[in-house]
Length: 89
Image (cartoon, rainbow, N blue to C red; front, side, top):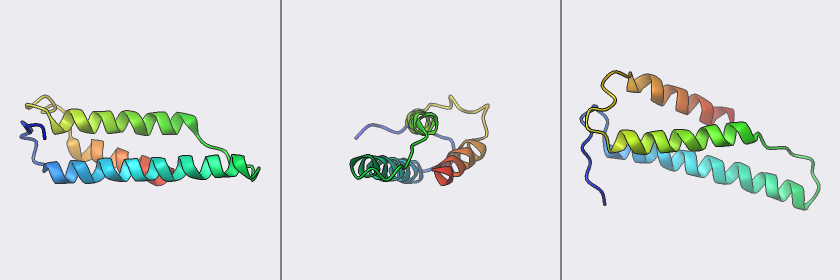
């Protein structure tokens, strides 16, 4: 386990939970798409949204290991955007 240097007011567990939600949502949508392709059900997948959500996961990883590098940002807004994008999937 890596060391957390983050002093941003959020716990590692909060960030890990959001990362797990991203993983679960991505896996669910991608599996549904592949099943649709297999059985020719016609479902489509929003690749741009998938890539954007993947980038959010990387951003969360950076926040988790920050050393006040996100002091100029409102993390509540970042988390809110990520949660809203997850709901769009």
